[in-house]
Image (cartoon, rainbow, N blue to C red; front, side, top):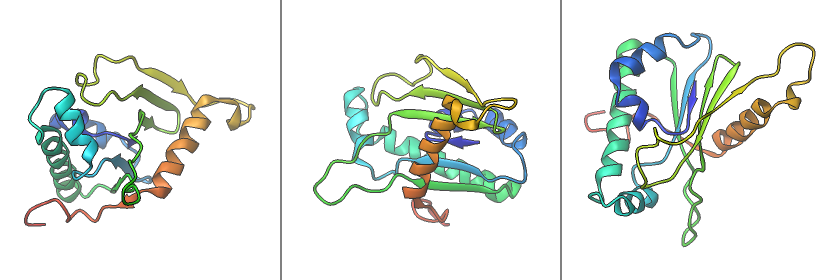
Length: 166
């Protein structure tokens, strides 16, 4: 499973842990997230009319839950953060939220930072190619390549920064 945003998932702790138990043990569970220090979180909170730290706290709480589950259950979880933009340049906001399941299905929705919780937005289910067809003949392939390029550019998290008493 690979996620671009985790807050909505980790908010449902029991369901989240059940989903992680279904993941393949031979593959890492990967999360690609915004850093809690990302200015886009403050912007999104202000756009939603919320306290400017609400979205930051959501990310911090998600990181704590992910780290706790990783340590308690000994899951192979990896977290990376979108790379910071060069000084003085705005960083692009991630457009899509992607979840890859069992190398067969990609759940895809889009982000509108500061507008709702995301659950009301439409979701696409993109299936990997089957049979004798080339993998590159499916949108699943393109989404997987897109995610892999983002992952390769992202900054690894060592499960310490942003967590007290780590």
